Image (cartoon, rainbow, N blue to C red; front, side, top):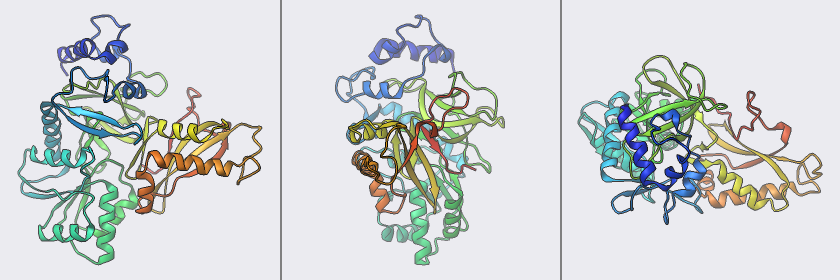
Length: 428
């Protein structure tokens, strides 16, 4: 990373973005190092990054592509890229595809999702087109019926399948149940969510000659995050230098972590995005440096800013707002999102704490906590309809509520602060 490149970006953002101008108002004019700058607060960032009267953008929205990023349907969030920024984005990501095992002439089925302003399908397709090796691109999409997808994969002898683990496993389940053989498949590129051991077993049953690897680590809001590192651990990536800078910060102090094996939250700075600057932006994940190579880090799961449950993204404020809307009597005094995995699927549990004197704790009880739990679930499903849709499709377990006392909520042992998201899924 060039110090001049970073200082230019900081000056540009301060001068042209009202959000960054306010964020950096107390800093000296010559602040030019990442550690000089505060971490972006996601909630404040998206409150300022609106469709009208936007305070994050550095110029008018006159030449760009608009994509939808995580958030509630009632308050959608949008990320924008100019054509040059998008070209840089897919060009760098495409270079990283060779580290996944992409070989010249590979026939690649793009099974990510398209439409409704989502980026993943177009992003992977364009990245393949910018890869440094020739490849044949098959733009099938994740929403295509399996009854037509399987014959297409067979007839075109697809060698690489790229999609979310949920999509790949849905396809694998169909292949196994139908007794179909897709012997040409040799590489499974997954992205968007973690791949667990039980999913690997299913994929190996359906595609015994294929290896599952990360397609790369990126998001439409944070941009470029991690280029795959060849090896046995698909969670290990390295930063897309010189296009972005990845930091891992201590959960308590916010100071950059430099030693291997110490977990922290991932923060990214994009050095090529100027219309919608991303400077010290929390990516929503936790990671640790591996010490096995320069800039190599291992993704450990979601941080408290958000959580991924199967194909569904949720932010903590989604659940907080649902509880606030349903709990008109103010009985809930604390909340955690607990993600678990059983029977081959993810499930989200809302752990809600009530006050010690609340007599309604229990199954229905005189205070009607069962009704309150139902109301919270209904409210959250109304703003994240993808969750009940995914339940009906068999991708995730139904939302549930677990009642607790505040003392039962997990806290950071070093700071005593409440841990907003507990990811209890296995990561090994």
